[in-house]
Image 1 (tube, rainbow, N blue to C red):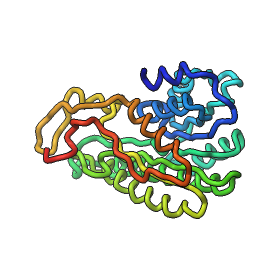
Image 2: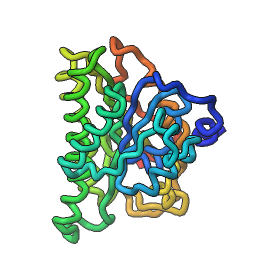
Image 3: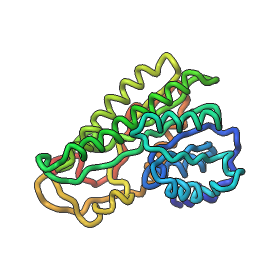
Image 4: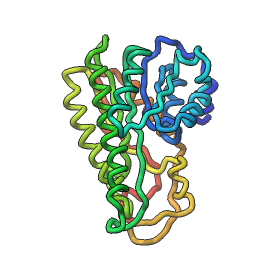
Length: 270
């Protein structure tokens, strides 16, 4: 059963469940994780730039965002995570609606055109940093503020890293740089969250079959200059891994977890 179908067929959710916020929830990994969290009994705030895509996620989870009863378990918050004022407004909307936050899945991310670095514009570089790194920082900062004040105190942040947090693909400097930076952000949040019962970990994902990964099924550039089809895995496995990380008590933490297509070209010499 896929993550989407499992969430859609789940029994009605309690309005007393833990509260999660998922960025980039309108598609791909964000959508899969949001649906899995809904299926596991979470109340879930869906963040993303496209209101229509977020509404589709809500409907796939068995909710109609136009019906007030749906608001017991799902909250649609169209947000550009690269804008500080937009992030502040979204988290304030969450606080007013549910009063707390137990889990942030910091997932929103974009890439730049795969061109040689000397052909990359500064605007293309900056847009990736604004979403992937500054957006993750802004959401984590807002989560800290809420988690430190709420009762009971604390919560968990899971940052979406990438296999690119370990090794780059050709012509991927902006994306790879941000994912290496996410690792540093995760470690700092993990350390700084200790006094406030805030746990932070990172999931590094390789070749989950989302819309962004479709080119891998047709062939993508390799380190040796060749073009090759790469193995992929069902995005449902990513959602299951995030659910495991989220299921732990705050006294335990998965600091880093890698989930990837078993035979993708990562381990070894390509």
